[in-house]
View 1 (cartoon, rainbow, N blue to C red):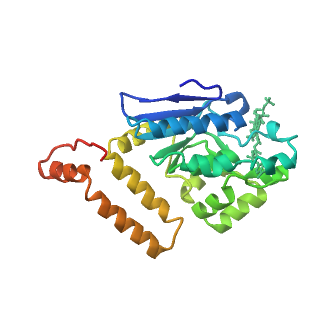
View 2 (tube, rainbow, N blue to C red; view 1 turned 135 degrees about the vertical axis):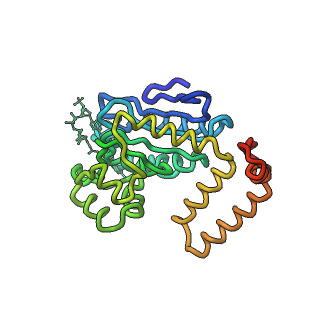
View 3 (cartoon, protein in one colour; view 1 turned 60 degrees about the vertical axis):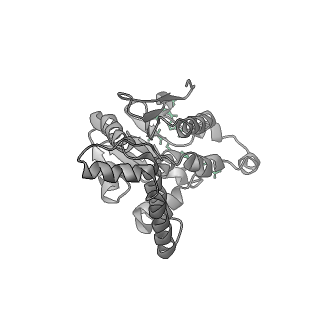
Length: 264
Ligand code: DAK
């Protein structure tokens, strides 16, 4: 697929079922304009619809930024009524997250600020380069997070740190982000994409329906009580026991061979 502000590549390495989506406005530090928004939604819809693609990686082009936030130049003279009437950012906060049930990873290479941090947190998990910097600096512009940052950051790193970051606008470096559980791990910048693609390929090699189910279960932990979440987990587990991949997976284990997945 061809886009203006992002690139979209299926089977990023060796027909591996991994889609690579790259924010591609490096001169503007991959700022998230409304065109980027529309194109990302389209790219994620294509990923979801393509049965050959099992896991995606989202990253930023250039060495400086994953995304330095929503496009300030585009927003600067937009009337408040338009923000309200267009329900600005609703497409990001609800649409994009629900656009795919398949797993996807954010590979954060440099600044992930404002909407960039919020976009990364929409991923199933984040792998960061050693120069990554996360922040919600919207307060410096007289606004506040508008794509879920106050909620997802708080759930990820706890109230104290999230509150301090939102109120001061300070950036958090990669090591601190790992200590705070915002990211899975930190790798040298030169290794980031390879690490993320390899991780995605590992996931893409798992039984696809079980991957979707595992994602759904973990996400349920953020939406419901422990008791409700445990019921959801048990029900999904029980459904998976009826799948062809469960029969294949257990047979493959007993026969000491690799499983051949059908995704059903
Ligand atoms: N938007 C547009 N352009 C950006 C940008 C952004 N967010 N960030 C950087 N750029 C552009 C710069 O303008 C510059 O372009 P030229 O001047 O060369 O044309 C180019 O990228 C390189 O940036 P710098 O020259 O500034 O590079 P430095 O290395 O000196 O600094 C920086 C890097 C990341 C520290 C700095 O660029 C920076 O502070 N950027 C802004 C970071 C930021 O504030 N992000 C949050 C954006 S606000 C809501 C409405 C709005 C929002 C929320 C809710 N509601 C209605 C509900 C706000 C959301 C946001 O994300």
